[in-house]
Amino acid sequence: MEILFITHKYPPYIGGMEKQSFELIRGMSKNHKVHYLAYTGKLSKVAWFRNLKREVKDILKKHTSIDIIHLNDGLMAAACIWLKKHTDIPIIATYHGLDITFPSKIFQNRIIKKLHRFDGGICVSNATSDACIERGFDTKKIFTVLNGVDHDLANIPIDPNFETKISQETGIDFANKKIVMTMGRAVQRKGFSWFLKNIVPHFDKDMLFLMVGPINKKTPLSHTLINGLPMGINTKIQLLLGIPTDTKAIIDALDNPNIKDNIYHAGKVSFQHLMQYLALADVFVMPNIKVDGDAEGFGLVALEASLRGAPVIASGIEGITDAVIDGKNGILLPTGDVSAWVNSIKSLLNDNDRLKKLSKQTKAYTLQHYSWEKMVEGYIEVFKNYI
Image 1 (cartoon, rainbow, N blue to C red):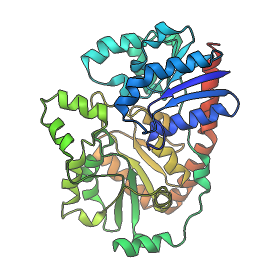
Image 2: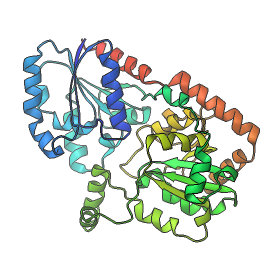
Image 3: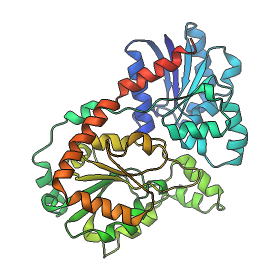
Image 4: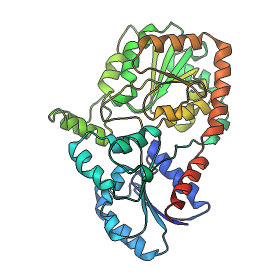
């Protein structure tokens, strides 16, 4: 099988979609002939998209034995609608969530209908698959292949000096804290500000909410200009560009003197530090809330946390329910239910035997049911349907 992958989500950029794209291409290249056209930052993204049509045509002209073309997300598919008229090669797109639910009438009423023309679609979760079918995609052409996770994360050694080092650097006694950790971009759907305002005030003195992820206290000029646009337009642009819409609310909560001692925001950290933080965490939380048009496509961070031994407590919504299976590799709770979240976190942290058992169980379940290899096998099975 010979495949052309076209993606604008790829390393050196960091993120779940970039990781998925990289692992898919790398996994496929082990047993199949692969060509790929990826945005790597050498040009501006505008210039890259401007050159895209010419680059794709050149590749297809040079490699006439290509069997299938893969587009790595809905935006990539929208940019390549022209391709269906140019070639008879089957074209498959992957859909992640927001690239299907994006709340724009033009996108929903015009672009989505044009995406129906492609030969097939692969969704990263059942929630995304349902969203596609609700928008008129042919059920026979929509497939679900769950994302994977890197099993090597489970084998990264725990640094015995990390806890002491980080305690000295921060002035926080990590050794005597019950650590509730989360990570990700400061976007509203992640529920970070909701958690800070509603859950952390109920924390005991020995509980610490550890937050990892970039946060910019100084609002960039471009973001200020976007915020100044009429309501509705600014929201759509923020979603499209992934602008951290929850930043101000998080900063305000971090400055709250009543909960300040229960929070440590580590900011953006290295991969090595992230792995050690996850190993320190007693519990990892994904307190997502519902935001119109901005669904969580999967929940890769939950799998990564569980491989580092941190039991996961997550909102039982959207694509998270395909990454966290209640009672198997984590606990699912109703989104926005303060009592359920407070009681679940406290009861787990106060039961060391249950905590240790759940830590081992979630790690074992994730290792057994999720991997990049399984994901690649799923894509191969779909591709075979079209060759």
